[in-house]
Image 1 (cartoon, rainbow, N blue to C red):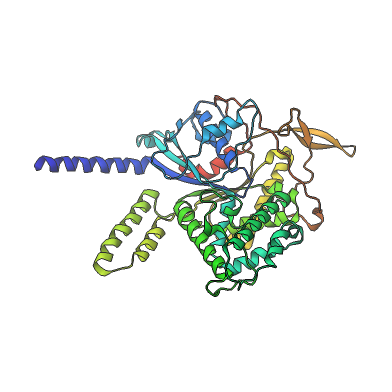
Image 2: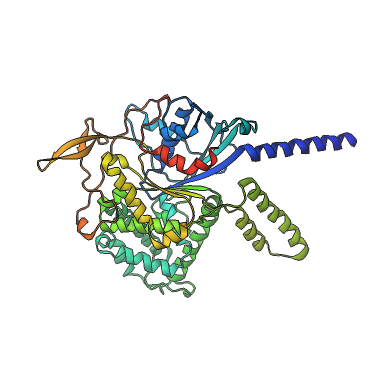
Length: 508
């Protein structure tokens, strides 16, 4: 018995030491790489991981990041490696396959994000100064979450009723430039009434027409504010019956049972519950830093309505998340949430306290606030170097609304113009007989570089005179030839600046 007690004390002491050492030397930073569709999230994460691994092999692939890690003429960086996936229930971000696509003999862009995925990286750093070095090596566990951009727009949807969502959605679909693309669905709405008896086959046809309308709005007009997100990026269980709904004319808050209106409302509420339970509460309550990628250049080229659509999407996404400072470090916050659950169950057993109130308190305790946000205008390699500052100023201006500033007051927000893969070179071409700055790139599927003249890139919200009725689509340039061994990294623009803005406070 005495020996068991001693063994228990030794085990407890060892556990306490391990926990104390971990609390001092290890930081866990969860970064959600978010953004609207076609903003380049998958390529961004692939480039970030690849360049970090190359940096650990002595290649200066992230100059600003490397400079910050230098101390007295030498780098404090000891090692960077991808951590095993362990028992995670979230799909794994298949970095190797995505890198292989980029580095193939015929380079190709990886497929777009169609489900959640994550990957963790370990970074080991020496501390600054002889005194702090006695504490041991600094370890940073960087967890990267890739999230479909289409699903991100379900965040503002969670606070709406079916009737209010229907009104707002139909207003957008009836805008002049979209009405033609949505005509089959809008014609279908004329054949159905909210008070009709629900007929599943008829309703499913309406659902399919609505999804087709969303696809048309995205592909023909560059629209991004498309809801629900899983209608344009289905993910798992893409054909489950709760997804068979669409916005309805004259929807009521309290419909009669058995009607189309009642069934649509019930499915809408089920969709909200499913997204909240399986995605937002599971993942978005637990990350510390956020990268919000925006293809603002593509929105400019798509026209005024697409640009305004993008602006509204950015604002609604930011205002649907929790920003601020976390008072407790992650280990203590996790412990407090666990304590609430354990203590709550004991109290419930004794005093019959509801399990719902316990779960809500624990969720509040374990919910992380986003402490740092980087808003990034992507595809900056599509404009010459002298125009890239305008992209950064433009995305800053979009975020400078009164509503967003109230949400982000007092927290570090940085703005960037970046390109995860630098696929062009700057050059000069002649347009209407005058020399202009262009970028030279090889269009995907071709073999020779061509000049691309992006025209004027405004430094803030464009005036009305900027817009025309023409729709332009950005060219898709082939990735440059990459070293498949990974030693040389991936050429990029300003990725190091984005990474440093998020991690500066933990790189001590």
